Image (cartoon, rainbow, N blue to C red; front, side, top):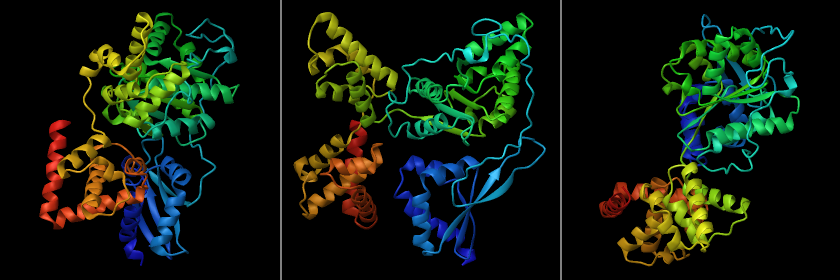
Length: 477
């Protein structure tokens, strides 16, 4: 049995894959390697302590059920965790952990003393300011409550909440949040800071844009106060650096930040950074910095899917006390789909025109006012569009796909619609099921498997699916 650990884990992965979304599976389960299987104890290797803590916190029930399904009720899971030493002379080693949450974390770093005697220059305000009076430089409007959760940001937002509850006490240190322009990096970063300031009154929190950090460092060189600059930043309990990619090519800034980073990290302080790209794609950065950026978690923010865009608009109008027709919100959500910033900009433009002209906001008015936003946005394929194309092909009303009828031709059309919805949209399995008469996610999984099997065995069925797929490509390229 001990030689079958890879086979057992492969079977487990097939079960897990059907119970988590594609992004979560790729992030949390693909990197895992099966090590051994002895006496019904399956040992798996995970790449970091962060992986272990995250799996135990979010997927422990799924893992236990899956392992017991494959190995029986006595089955147990153990982790083999790769631990990288801070010294480059030492190779990474591994530690073994049972399948239960870890509550302690060993700190092998060496503390660096900070000389805080006398006056320390605060680059934000004036020299000699007391530690507890440091302005965190946070926008109070950026909170978790105003950051709508969706598939596009669930990982990053969840990690941010975990950090806010226990700054410096999780494996998410540093926390790197990356993504394109206007996707909410600054919002999430400052939401973490605001939450920490609310829950930990004595924590010194500081948000700083990378360009301001660079300019402060340059000024400290000119005024011969580099030591004050370093000492000031070493006093911070939670440091939030926005747009870290602007450190690229600035060797002296990177060198100073390297020492600040080491001191904060080794003393259990929390570091949060944002970037427009993942650490592996940052160019012009020292390798020793990049390796430290990878110590914790790198979480990406993606373009919000349709449901999240609708929720953002509904929340925004509710917070502002504005009542917009549902068809106007749907028009905005369907057609402005490049970023949250552009979506909110389109809404503001619409409200401004309505206020100035003292006219109610109708769908026709929205189309006229927002033509500049919409013409630059690509047309998004939705489940409604897929249902329409499938029904046109089979010459049947779309209402039948949501009905409870079990007629063969309608069942097949419904299954093809579900299969293509899963393939071409970012909608979750649960939400796809809701679009087809309130069915659950297991029905969607079964439909997708059925379509895949029929395409392998029935050429006529395969041609139908390929023809509908071609129509999708033509209409929504």
